Length: 561
Image 1 (spheres, helix red, strand yellow):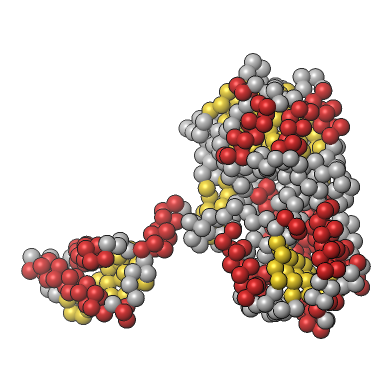
Image 2 (cartoon, helix red, strand yellow; image 1 turned 30 degrees about the vertical axis):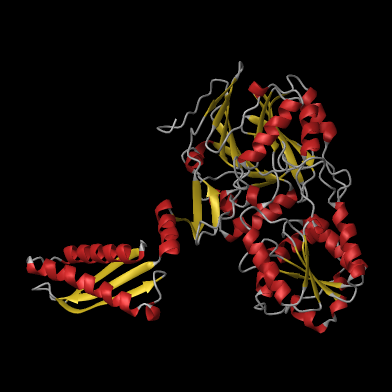
């Protein structure tokens, strides 16, 4: 398949997984039907600690780039970054319309507009329960509850039957906005001719027993906190896209007689959009600019900000480091972190919490002020039982999450040979007679973003890791262009190997080792600069290894006079 992408129109349907299977983030898969492609979600992932300097991680777009003329449309299930954050990068390679709820389109539009790519797409708003033909596929959009408003499950009618993707969901019976998961519509789709041929379902909480608590419980906890700490100023950090959470915090604050200030670029943008669309209703009299919060007594104000993941330059991180221009944290503050740390961000969050405590604030985080937006085991089993798919593929989660979800499917009666645990790069071919899996059939590695997309390759990342672990040593010297003899130097500059002022003797010995090697070369009549550089690097590297058992990067700088 890699030598020329298969564009069969033989009645089969292929599911091409580019991200989100075996990881949290980068959610992206494609439905390839009759020579056309529908892309479902295009998310990003936050970098791991072993990815120094990397800002974001994207799916590998090779498959889509080489099939750009076949992409009929992009379906966005909801506006979280792990499902929508890569759209602005994908649109550099693919020109296609995006189908989503008006709110999801509004939240995604900001990033696309900032990238100057609005002319490469058409934003198509979708209503709850709407059916829309996208290329050769009829797609039905089913309302589901999640931690961002207006999320969808999507059902795709294809020549080989219905493929249903739950998106991120939970069965919240008392959602903040009253918009529940439409179980009746899901059941109706399952009862139609042929039922559900393939189900793809959210696996994030497949290890968690029981049911996920309702989002509305957070509102009660916030009201209780405002009563318990009536004389304190509140700083509440949340995801900027978690507008249900923001709504509950604001309602509780206004109910307690407080003014509300929003902080953080994405938070301010999203709140403005949500107010325009009626998702958030905040009296103008209850809002103040962040520049004015110092004029209010602690009990009169609540600040809602970004930074729940400990992002280095976020509002909350700057507060914890005493570097924020308008907000100085102290003993009069209660800081509420209303989110769960994304895997890989735990150390960043812990560092921010430590800084807030050092500043004298009380910090509240964890289960009391946060509930998950994903279904737990009993909800997952309920949906599996309701839909009774012929084939089941767990998606959205680390490998252990998908494995647990596969076991849940077997518990409710789906045969084990009809449960497929796939990974990024796999292609599932669905035919009239059966389903086949081709492992690692398309490129699905990480695309690292550092400033601009494609700026960081695997080689660069490997060098960064080596520099972080071993350091760098630069040897600088000047040689006579005619004789090859050393005129000045060598001088040795080091970062991350040894600290110069404390290792004078070691550095002097290193200089001597380089000089000795270059004198040997000069006596042999070699004056080629490249040869001198190679010998300087080799001599210094050998000396460092023998004396310190380390392998820093050695960079020789040889100048001629």
